[in-house]
Image (cartoon, rainbow, N blue to C red; front, side, top):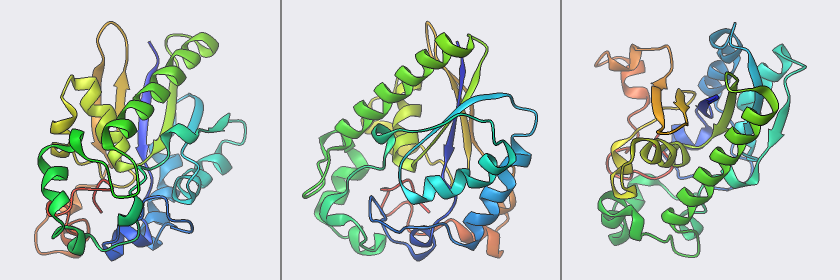
Length: 230
């Protein structure tokens, strides 16, 4: 079966500000996110991508822009079904504020029961994203062969749902998964899915305590685990 490379978009202005971007228009990459995007062609050098599929939101489009410039012949497709979860009334709000909401306790411990006020259910998000990924994987296999590699650029919670599904985990366990911005996760479907790699950024500086890089990605992730973290 083909290999699917899941790419989370680069860090955004909402990530660095500790906001839940959701589907809010105009959420762009911040300076570090643009650095991450610029590094992507080098990270993927030598990988023969059959296609790239992406969420329609601006941050995914911006993340793929350097790769598209480096590979002008790469087929690129926009896929509405891999858009960010619709967080409804929570969209654009501070994660620290949302951490105090009663619903957040359910988000942390029983996400399969969560529907965001005025928005989408996490279970519905997971179902549409998994269906889209598997359908694209089957299409890539038909058009490019079983050994093909393809890229899916999407969002944190979506990647968590895809990894949980591949590992046979209940959706209620998907908050245990934390893909960083611009990280690459590899999954191969078949008789049973294989998680080949998870959250690869090629950068281990975040694990050095008391440094700017070590503090960079810690914005309220454990208190408000929505949007995939910062």
